Image (cartoon, rainbow, N blue to C red; front, side, top):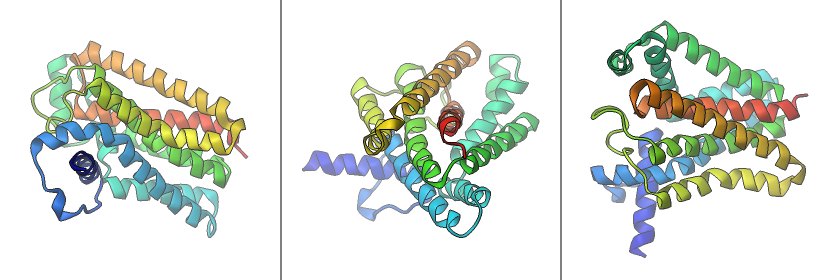
Length: 259
């Protein structure tokens, strides 16, 4: 029983860190808990995906698909405090404007957003909205439910396999390493919604498999870039992987579900 309570506590810690949602007071807080809460990042993705899917479903019953896509995306950004979008923008600034490892790290640490970050984030959010709007409503709902947890499992893979690149930053309190057992938990949480969609519609398995492979490929490509440029990952890199793989999944799913 104590083990289950502690796992629930770790989930709430992850939920508090990555969203604006309140958590019960009994959860408490210790810095070490954040370190182990990374196994539940994809479970937080299920919460975010469910919320954005609900917003999309409700909005598309009142307005055209582009409006529903924009409202759903805005709802997800509000719920998470643009945490991952900020990481992606910082990564664009750092890797776009820095020529040396030290300069890349310095730029990513700067709270100000630059041209690379602004353009990158704008294009990314715009592409999300366009892809969701291009799908049939049921397909967009399924895509949101699948992409949010799976993209967070992709980010967790970096924690599992790569070294943390610096001694300070957004990810330091909770994500400098991950055991294989913790990653298996994260992977199962990330894959669960995809499996559920596949069980509901067996014809979706080929495109779901393609989306999974594409997300894995994007993760490997980004991981290689991070290792070459800065020797590992930072919190901004995790956010970038989550955002890029989320869009990659939408690209694959939209390719088979456009109207």
